Image 1 (cartoon, rainbow, N blue to C red):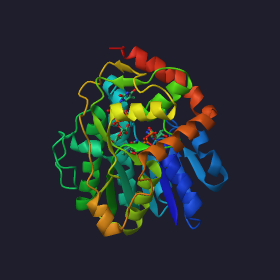
Image 2: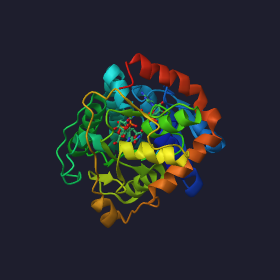
Image 3: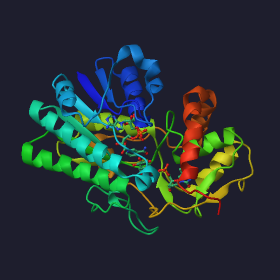
Image 4: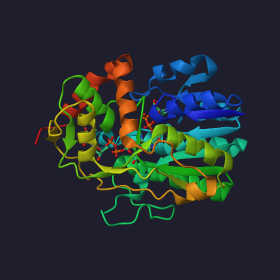
Amino acid sequence: MRVLVTGGAGFIGANFVQQTVATRPDVAVTVLDALTYAGNRASLDPVADRIEFVHGDIADLDLVDNLVSGVDAVVHFAAESHNDNSLAEPWPFVQTNIVGTYSLLQAVRRHDVRYHHVSTDEVYGDLTPDDPAFTETTAYNPSSPYSATKAGSDLLVRAWTRSFGVRATLSNCSNNYGPYQHVEKFIPRQITNLIDGVRPRLYGAGHQVRDWIHVDDHNRAVWDILERGRIGQTYLIGADGELDNLTVVQLILEAFDRDPADFDHVTDRPGHDQRYAIDASLLRTELGWSPRYSDFRAGLADTITWYRENEDWWRPKKADTERAYAAAGEQKL
Ligand code: NAD
Ligand code: DAU
């Protein structure tokens, strides 16, 4: 079996490729990645001689058509993925997340190739503290340009499945953590700040809730869905990991033996979603999936160790990332 993995040099895609090479010797992997600021070829170094890497854009119709014609399945991770960037400049999100997905769908339609679409719980908008968790039938209600473009891409997949018979599945996952995550994201930003002796930055009061899952648990679910999921079905992926941002910052400080009050409140994100929570019953009962990382503290400790031991990987991106936050107007409250 040959699989085309888009966005395989990004956080979740690189972990997916490494997991696939380690556990599925019968699967050949081709990665298609544009190596944007978020992509990092070094994330594939451990498997570089076991995969094919193509540097290119998912919106390039001819390139995509050619690559898709030679594979049995496509797993589509490539995206512009950061909410804060989508607030500063939405256009790349429309181009990659919507036009790029269109390009892949036309190719899998033409060549009748199995397609799995990786998406986010943010398409459902946010919850109040008392709301039940998202399910596969929750109405779409995205808040940011990022989540709106992911919602748009999901709807294209549903339409191509119904109207053209494309053999697609979709998954909408909650917040991932683990190795190889860009230092712009919440957890790696605070870990690398602390390594540099800088205080963590909490948006606003930090009462927003995210539903954390380890990236390896997400990727095992993607394989379960690719192999055994029902065509046309959406599966929600989550590991019952709800925590507010303040608690996460305090757990990171604790892991560094620092005072739990040793952080700064900074400018809040406009339109900041209050709470995400996933009901993954369908995935658990129908496909028998369950998370292996049930202890967030332990998963966080592994992640901190990884960033301590892999400074060469993240250091080149750190200064530019912090400059971008400052240029966007982030200030201590
Ligand atoms: P990321 O930003 O770390 O990686 C994205 C990758 O896509 C990068 O390697 C980048 O170079 C590549 N890319 C961007 N534009 C491209 C283009 N036009 N053509 C080819 N490659 C391109 O993102 P991530 O956090 O790994 O997220 C991967 C996917 O998972 C996304 O679709 C995202 O919406 C989804 N998702 C992420 C999370 C999360 O917590 N990070 C949770 C649920 C779903
Ligand atoms: O829910 C899934 C989504 O999770 C994915 O679709 C996105 O691609 C991924 O980036 C993530 O989105 P969030 O916006 O939730 O993640 P982020 O890491 O940017 O922020 C997590 C929370 O932490 C959020 O409430 C904002 C807050 N935050 C973030 C940063 C960078 C801070 O308090 N301080 C920070 O410095």
